Length: 185
Image 1 (cartoon, one colour):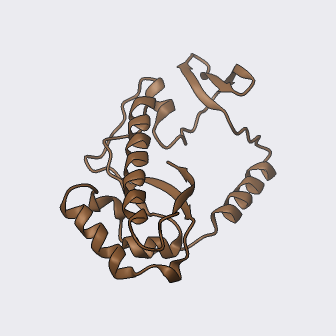
Image 2 (image 1 turned 90 degrees about the horizontal axis):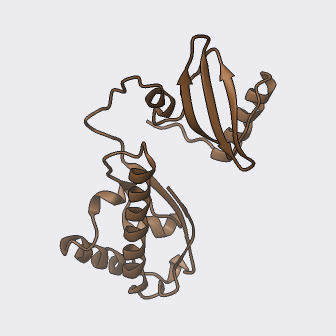
C-alpha cells in the first residue's frame, strides 16, 4: 500500500508549516561539526557564505544518516539490511509509439544474462515500462551512504549503471537519440 503524493506540493506545504511555526528554514547548508557542552550543543555549519556557528539546548537529528548523533560520539544502530538508494532521473529524446516493447525486453534480458546490467537495480518495473514513464526507477543496493566517500561511490555506481542502460536503449530502433534530461541520487 502506498499513498501517492505530489512531491512539490508536499514540500511547499511542509515549508509553510515550518515557517508558520516561527522556525527558520535555511537551505544549502550542511552541518560541519557538533560538540556537546555543559549547556547544550555547539554546532558549526557550512553554507554558501562560509562557516558559521550556533548553539542549541536541544538538537533533533533529522539528517537521515544520523550525522549529528555520530558527530557527538553516540552509538548508531544499523540494520543488517539497508534500503537501496534511489537514483532519480528523467529520460527524453524518443517517441514511445515508435518503440517495440519486445525488442526492448529482449535486449535488456540479454544484458542481464550476460552480467552487463544488474536486474536488481530495476525495482519492479520493466525497462519498457520505464521508457513509458520517461524515467528509470533505479534502486542501487549499497553498504551505506552516511559519509562522503560512500555517497560518492554510490553516485558513481548509479552513473555507470545509467550509462550502460542508455547504451542498451540506444541499440533499440526508435531509441537511438535517448538521453538523460536530469539525474540525482
